[in-house]
Image (tube, rainbow, N blue to C red; front, side, top):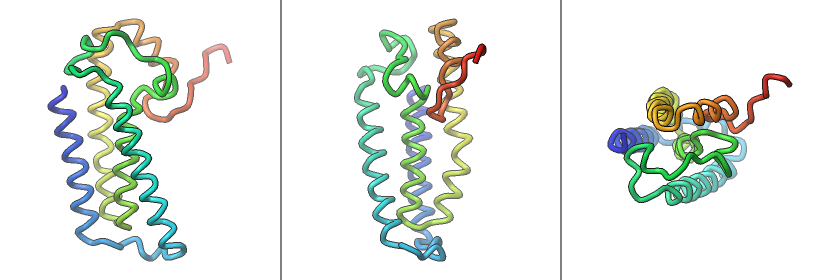
Amino acid sequence: MAALRRLVLTTCYLVTIAFSLLRENTLLFIYSGIYLVKLSALVLILIFFTSATAIHRSFPKKREKAGDFLKLRTTGLYAHCRHPLYLTLILLQFSISLYFYSIEGIVVVLFTLPTWYALARQEEKDLLKHYGNTYREYMKRVRMYVPLRRRKPNE
């Protein structure tokens, strides 16, 4: 699973950057505030990179399978989103494309979304095997990516 995760991560970013640099400035038709967009994208890149690094550092050194974690995380960011690291990495990938004003880069991001989704689903299968009903209940309460809480059935 870790090797697949590294492959997806590396491929998504390399392809996004390659396509963004291939034809830089293809979003220049949205000219209003060009420097503001570039500065905002750079700030987003820094925020998402720092966030992804912080989330990743909170993991144990060995994280090949669900059993490597001492317990299921359901607090902090995980109380709002089941996959905050993947969400952050997707937003970082999008921010890189925005920084280079690249329609091609944004298209690559859109095409890699199913890959991120499949990777998260595979990880969830492992978590369901390891944590069982605890993770199933967690899935009912917390959304996969969109950091909004689900409504309880009686609301």
